[in-house]
Length: 111
Length: 116
Image (cartoon, rainbow over all chains, first blue to last red; front, side, top):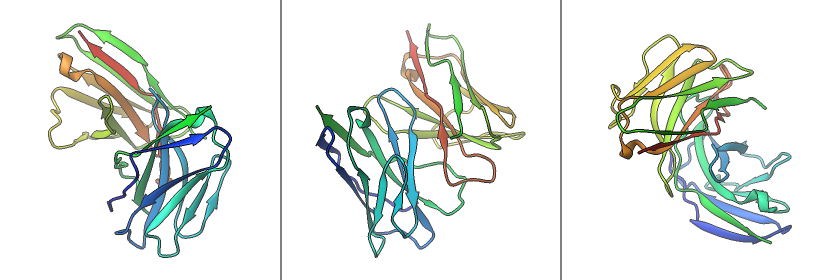
């Protein structure tokens, strides 16, 4: 799987937007960009994924650069419950293989 | 969304005993399930891939005789840590992609194993 690079940590104030960046310069044409997050002492949970176009769901938005070498997960209004480690992962389309987790970004939300 | 149930959530055992962890997909079938291990302050590391009706596939460095995996049905995989030792203390997490829908994986809540 192609490698992703994320900042180790980020901070945000409560109720403000958060932009979590991810670089994936070696992404292939069939790689989807997935985001998962892991709250403290829990298993990871799916957040969002996309291929080329920006994506929105009830949890977040995913902005994908035109060259697909980077992407940004956007939390529109951070809450204290959004404090978690966020993982950006590339997966080939339709792959049922395991997810390969990097170190992710630890998001701290300040009240 | 789909639900993966993992049990127990926490277990404390004595050194030398065996511990069984169950991973169930509650509302979908999973021909494949994955077992991960996570040490404090570290990321998830894949231990093995559990395949329904066949042998599990273990990652390099993971002892198959120590971490026994059984995937007897399309909704249940079990991980047994045999003769547990303190160094096996970790957070064990399972995941499953719904059969035929490999894009998203659903994770259990994890099992915190503490070996005394």
